[in-house]
Image 1 (spheres, one colour):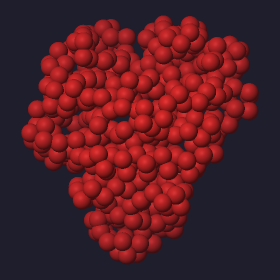
Image 2 (image 1 turned 135 degrees about the vertical axis):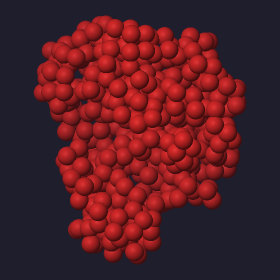
Image 3 (image 1 turned 180 degrees about the horizontal axis):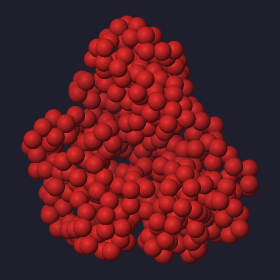
Length: 448
């Protein structure tokens, strides 16, 4: 096991990684921007260093400064968390070239899955179902119209290098596609430095179901069941649960085996997630692979009893998985909600000073918190997620009831949060019935 690691991230995920390191006896090096000087992860880390001004480009994306700190402190490995530099091949390459272990997959695997177009090609070659579409960048909007008519509307116009819903738009006609093309291409260029666009058939009434995998460097790969992440706003997840209420044992096994096949096809090691769309007829299609730890990983931990961060560290250190697929048992049900500093009606961020912060403390609750609480400032520089709330139970209905109780006892003042919206989701009869397609929020919440 490593003696010391640097955590190239902030907020709740940095705190989460530090907790596991403390349990394993691994020293931690934290980094922080000027805006995060009093953040919880700074106080929790054994050492912490300033990386720059508040904007992420000047701090948490400052590869030179992060690498400098890693060398100065003698960090043997770097954990990137999620977001920020976690799927940046240049960062992984620079870390590795410096003789420091990157806690994640190989540079080649990150690159293979970093392009939506190239990942489609890889999955087709591996025999993993993909949504009908093209595996090359579009030349222009007019070619997009031609392809859309061949596939049949509605289609999803997507940025090849994108994520988080950026550069993505459903189009129902030639006119809509032409109008969407330039704007989505510009956003893709701005956010990802890649304006390549492609088209897929839009899967109607889809569910977003993802499979967590772990793979060691010895070639052993297992799947840790699935998470349903269909409750989204602006193509970003807000409620996740494990297992999915829609899958039966046979489909669960087929999707798990497809995820393992996908990972093995690119020589993948460490933790990763294969995301699928599942239609109402129970057909599933590869969407993308996240080559990192996911925001929603705690619910997988709750139904398997595994510590995914500990597994990541062990795999990166060269250890083999100490179990096989038959050893991975599915136990109970877990739900996670993301607590955002945002207006629950408009979903616009709500920066400001937190004047009251009291999360629930029931024994079935797991709080993952990235804010210092009362007196802390929520700035406009970073993602507005301030915490995650996780509940566990023996079955789904009990988990929903427990989440309702926990949300009723979650008190945040001074800023607006999405807690009222989350309460509404939990109480909705469609959610309770497991009718959780990706249009749930637009269909049941925003229309009110």
